[in-house]
Length: 230
Length: 131
Image (cartoon, rainbow over all chains, first blue to last red; front, side, top):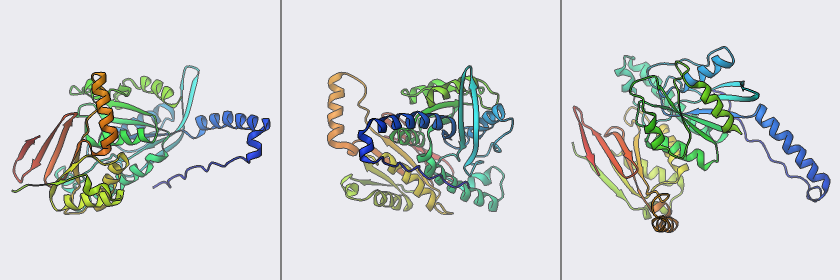
């Protein structure tokens, strides 16, 4: 698993310099340079959500669109992504705007993991137990990484009930940490998809309906990312 | 199959540390009882509860189902909102109710802002309880 990044240290200026004009100019220059630096190099964009919502499919779509390669494997069986995956330096463009970020695909967050669910889907018992063990570790890592995100896209399966405690807890934690959130309702290509249900569950957030698999509305998502990062 | 619901008044966890609260609630859930907690945990404690649950999953303990009902104060008439705001200020996390059930017994918790549906698992069929 990639090493968890440490928070940058904030160094304090000498007191005398703070009061002087030189100090003010220096802070202004640092702020401007710092902002450029952050926007261009250090935006960490996390994909969060419950298992099987389509986080890795979306990560693959973004990577394919802008890097020409995929990021991770996808599966109909839950908990396919069991380790944090990172793709660095993705540059996306929209008109004259440009955005650079590191994309972090996280394992789905759940409150229960039963190896027997994998056995029911055809996996051998030993394999299923191993997958369940890795999945629990994946959930722990996803939660640990919450603190290190600059912006987060919550990826929900638009065919399922979005008003679950796990979704509410993740979003509540991001808000408490002042991390900007965008909610994506994925799988809108399916008949059962109901975007209005997501909008009603989280009325205070922007919700975009997409199909990561077929690329539907992906441009809208990119537009929204620019707004989110600004 | 019998079902045990254990009520925990907020005063029982009020003085505990975050870890202490989580350990206490999880211990009850691991005894195959459904916890009815008066009030709610802090947001960070909810994620810590999920994290600790994951650490404790094994062949016997498959995790939990979690549901929280917390009265919203952001809508309605002005007086109602003010009253709600004052109540929230005084009672804090004492308001609302939290349900934590072991995954071996609770199949699913469905919720909307004012209602919780708890689906329990039996060997051959599912029962539905409504509060």
